[in-house]
Length: 594
Ligand code: PEP
Ligand code: MG
Image (cartoon, rainbow, N blue to C red; front, side, top):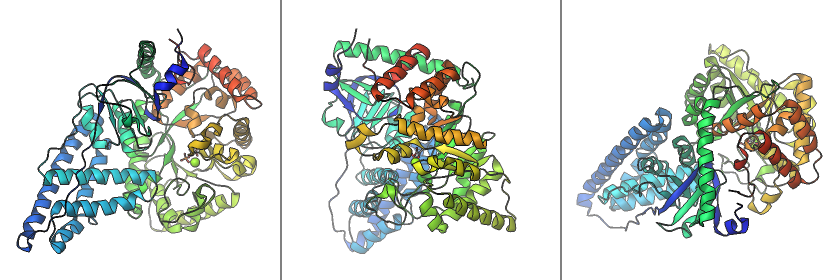
């Protein structure tokens, strides 16, 4: 029986799926109580007692966080706990703690008001950067502010929700989700947040289906409503009909079965039926995600984005030493597989450390353009990466390259940096391949020339699509036009793979297109030999590869390159998946059937 799509559309709320799975159960609306503290004058005689009260609240907040760290360690291991260790450090941050104490003592003001004023000021700076990563750190600061103020009021910290419920909230913190998971929550959805937020990363690690950026789903859900949360498609259905519910129960069972089957795929190779071997690698951006390499069977890191971990808490860029310690851990834990570090891709939608604003940032000062202008950013990062290369295999990837001169200039700086390290007697690997992101059409169009001077290509379809189709990748208004399977995008991929093959260099694809299961046979058919994606998606991709023949991929690819009606071609790809790929088609957006 088919569920009527209209009937579904009426009740569906959409968001960004960040942790796959289907949750079915009662909703729990979690409203975080944020305290507004009134300003109160304190007698100068007892102002020292007031700052002692602040110190006491900070110590209690430390105790809370230590508890959360212990739970996180038990559930998720050391790496995940480091998120809260960072919060613990923020409690006594040199830019914040002494400022609160002076605020209390200089103004003879109550501690709660001082905390609220000082922390809000720091938070506003982070939020106004307009950058997703910093907004997330701003959330951490709000969490800390609430924690201290509650202790000042002797309030209990309530991260309690109903057991076995699906939690809805405007925003939750990484600490909340850890504590909720102890109550066995089934899923969670938030009005705000992005896929790379700590909450999203935690939800994936905890296997809690989750959706973020729902644009106000909390206005439409009440505690006790019966809901379905589809963390695969990013949809929430409130009080579904029996028919819709039955459909999702089936989908849930199929998903759980697939997850079980996926476990058996982890040790197997990603190989087509006719013996073509494909390498599946991971896109990572935090060391907390490293355990997922083994969990999902990744053969190394195809893309390590360095923006997130480098830009900490809105303060200045971290030092070479801090970067080295992080990269060394990543490289050592990824060995014997290779780590592909991408040098900073600032600009575009990612923040600029120098507070610079642009009219048209995607076409502006971004990626390698910034780094070649600001060697004080590039050189410490390169030194840290080179030093880390002594602990395992490292490749360096250049973002937003448009012209060969940028590659040549980068290589000169790399050479100079190597010479300096040698002079200082610091060890690094002799072989460090340098590759370019193929994410601007000019590189794909001139791929033959680039292939002569680079060691590998990595195709970034997220940007390549926006640049070739002139569609902003983050703009809802034109989202319908953002088509990664557009023949023009595929032509550029083909030009890149052809040039790579002719020059004998490897070519991988690390954009989100790799996770679109419809596209997988086409991409393999176009000559891609490595796919890199968020680790959780790798078993599904492997399932498709193991069900196809190279000849089929080539045939689908040649049709895709000239497909005049994308919708019709998509349907053909879905039919192919249905016939070949052992039950993955329910990941796709086709009309649900029971
Ligand atoms: C891409 O552009 O496809 C890519 C992988 O890089 P990012 O999403 O970080 O821009
Ligand atoms: Mg990109």
